[in-house]
Image 1 (tube, helix red, strand yellow):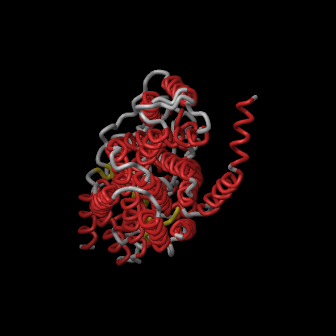
Image 2 (image 1 turned 90 degrees about the vertical axis):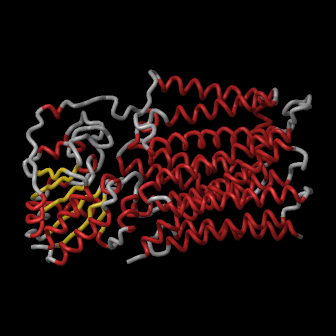
Amino acid sequence: MNQHILSILYIIASVLFIIGLKMMGNAKTARKGNLLSAAGMILAIAGTILLHEGEVGNIVYVLILLAIIIGTIIGWTTARRVQMTKIPELVSMFNGMGGACAALISLIEFQHLFPFDHVPPGGSQGHSGTLICIISGLVIGSVSFAGSIIAFFKLNGVLDKPVRLPRYNYINLLILSVVAGISILLFYSASPITIYALLAIALLYGVMLVLPIGGADMPVVISLLNSFTGVAAAFGGFLYDNHVMLTGGILVGSAGTLLTVVMCKAMNRPIMQVIFGAFGTTASGSSVSEKGTIRDISVSDTAALMNYSKKVTIVPGYGLAVAQAQHAIHELQTILEDHGVEVKYAIHPVAGRMPGHMNVLLAEASVDYDKLSEMDDINPEFPNTDVVFVVGANDVVNPAAKSDPASPIFGMPILEAENARNIIINKRSMNAGYAGIDNLLFYNTKTSMLFGDAKNVITKLVSELKQM
Amino acid sequence: MEQIGNFLALLGENEQMLYFVILSIFVGIEVIGGVPTILHTPLMSGANAIHGVVIVGAIFVMLNTAANDYLSLTLGFFAVLLGTLNVVGGFVVTDRMLEMFKKK
């Protein structure tokens, strides 16, 4: 009886996941969609605890509840308190936790099947289906966990340089073959040492997979690892013949893979090149030899220029978020609009550290959703724009992406800011952008550089404008 | 040859499961199709929370473990804890992001 009710709860939960995810694809229904998925999750978890028939003592239930309570408190407070600029790190961290959970499940199930003290003589005979699920869950979960942790530290700035061993592709291939080798060995001799060896080598692979990848490609990596964890969860579903785990896992696995592909498209970086390629190592610098000169502009000149413009377009980048200037930029927008200037934001698909991250940051500063224009809509408007104000963005406006085949970002779709009448770029210094390459736009004759901390400069701009 | 036979048998026995998997893959792709770029981050984060359903497996593990199997209980405890972090953190942070889109 209970088992039947549980099955029905699982069906409801699965449907809620699907509807929730679908609703999240539309800005109007997104929040409700997320809550629906969460409701499905609560049904699945509570139902499992209350209705699944296990013959265990109360102590086990106490332990489960304790783990859930601790996890809820930590998860809730971290998610509530974290700064919006740190969202990508956080998503990566939570993803790693899911991967670790999947790997632990496999580890324990393996021990249930092949206990330490008496390894069954027949080896894995008759268990091959189960063993496939255990091995896959363990390997994929561990890779996802280790990779996510490395991605976390990279986004955090702890690991800021891509670490590249010579011939790392061959090393990784070697590690991967060892993973495959040990996995096959497990079918012949299912000993505890072998499974722990597999765990260790899978973790190593996760580290080695992400370590050589540059920070600019981290969103793609997180999205990929996200779908990995989904697949690991799905293997857990196979293991227990549990359909809610299967639906949830596969849904995320396939949706995550598609999302990864879409992101790669937005950055024009083939997925293979992200993982096996060499971003930034092919130091180009060919065309940037004849650099030209850089012009400075003062805050008051900038204010005057903007004040007498008809149309100003703001190109925000991650630098804006780092300087916590999203509120200041909203103030600038408001005062310009009060002075009769048309203001728009041009959002590159990968502005920030994740696709859509910049929208989240600006929304936090209560910038109107309708003011944000996507790249394809705003690009034709640049020739009619009086001033483009680039704040903390760099690679996404670099014309080298269109003109210099030697540039590592060649082919990436960019915001065509160079077509505007005036370009003002706010930067802290002349350092290169995230991708570590020089920007031709800085040397454009229409460009003026407004040096200084974004928040500081924008606040000054606002007070200048107030006096006009 | 025998190995191949075994493998085919494994697939055949799980025919329903395989249908289930294939259809779910299509549902996943269908559900994501045509999502505007601005929603990619919340969507990734929401999907991230959904794969936290792996916690159901962690609870199963605990409920199948004898009360004196301390190693499994300890590992299981951490599995449930980490799974909860994934679920709760994932949904809450997604909600926080989407909350901002609402303020118009």
